Amino acid sequence: MKHLVILTGAGMSAESGLKTFRDMGGLWEEYDVTEVASPVAWENNRALVLRFYNERRKQLYEVEPNKGHLGLAELEKYFKVQIITQNVDDLHERAGSTNVLHLHGELKKVRSTLDPSLVYELEGWELKEGDLCEKGSQLRPHIVWFGESVPAIDEAVPIVQKADVFVIIGTSLNVYPAAGLLNYLPAEVPVYLIDPKPAFTSRPNVKVIEKGAGEGVRELKKIVTE
Image 1 (cartoon, helix red, strand yellow):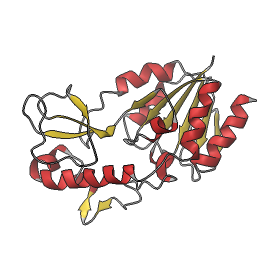
Image 2 (spheres, one colour):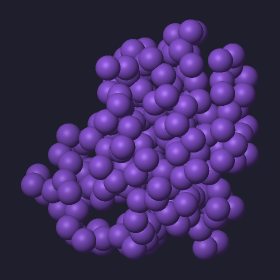
Image 3 (spheres, helix red, strand yellow):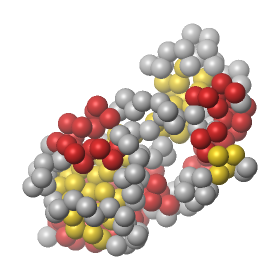
């Protein structure tokens, strides 16, 4: 069975109604997003950071996977599918995809500020000051913030190296280290780019599908299953 590897970004979830940082114009209320999504922000204004992520989490509970998510899950009937996502939502999993690697963390999870290996599923959408891990330290969002390393990238590299087909959906590949994953893709592997306004076409072997996630995945399915 061929190995289909899919890299998804914010555009993947846009059709579900999730706001991206780009949709916000880089701002949340009057704050630059880096002021609410960084270790410095956590140290300087923890209440603000908690409120920002509580609102993101609450919104996630109000939306559903779109046709693009559902279409990718259906591809598991034909391929060994591995999704590598820059998104922190759980819409791929809720759609039925069984192999999902989150590069930038997961919104519905929290972790210890003392021991990063202590990760928990958060019950409900609200994380509060005083919510502690088993070692007694404050819990924080299980998110890779601006300025932090991306531990999951080491797991993503060998996945990309084994791809028979590589698909990019809803990301401009401007964010590193995720953008660097293409450097590990064998040159002969076909690449499909699904994006209504594609910004990335520099690699040879790229077949562009200028559509949103839902229609684009439907067209992709026709191409790769024929």
